[in-house]
Length: 268
Image 1 (cartoon, helix red, strand yellow):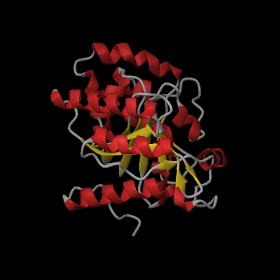
Image 2 (cartoon, helix red, strand yellow; image 1 turned 180 degrees about the horizontal axis):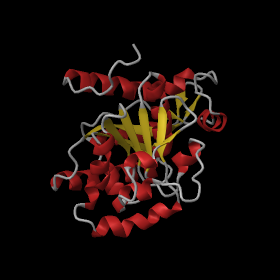
Image 3 (cartoon, helix red, strand yellow; image 1 turned 135 degrees about the horizontal axis):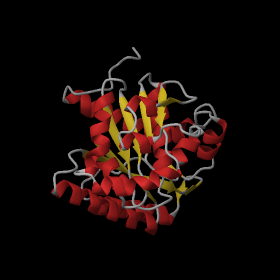
Image 4 (cartoon, rainbow, N blue to C red; image 1 turned 60 degrees about the horizontal axis):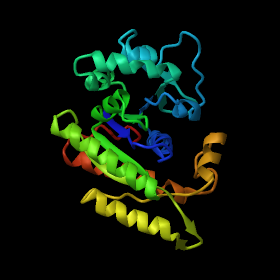
């Protein structure tokens, strides 16, 4: 199972949007995808239309080893997509992870129990530098860093890259950064807004060799797709899928090249 985390150290950077649409795109190719909502705000859980019922295990119980990992996994309304949800209670995991030896490895270790059940796992991390954020990043084979095409997005990108460097320095993060994903790239007709153009150029400089992926354009169609449960293609906007299809192509090429590709061609 390939594990990917969407991480940015600021709110509104497109982490959940990236996680949701990327997971759907991978699932539509026939792969079995597990999504993990590691953000106590639970936006991903909401996007998937899942309501956490009383006494229903969530990521909190999974991380605390109170239930087998399988008991925290639920089918979503989308084919080939499953979810480990979160709720407000996930905030309480901070003390547990802080007091546990090598708490940043908690999620990575738990995922080993279900390694053979899914092809891909996508983790939506919280925007704060917390223990949940650390364990979400450390669990990743591949990291995608969404960043809004704005000054706030550049600051978030810089802080996220610094955190990754810190985790690499102590040999906690062993994965790689697949790319920086510009979010809310604004265009008027065929003309890119100056703020977006300058911000994306700055991302390339800040990233210093890290790939800057095709942008997630500013569009209300993403919200429409989430609200209706339809794909962007079904809504008549297949071009908006381009960033996610590019990520999938990179994953398949990279992992196939090293004969470690968990994205097996089960779709035929």
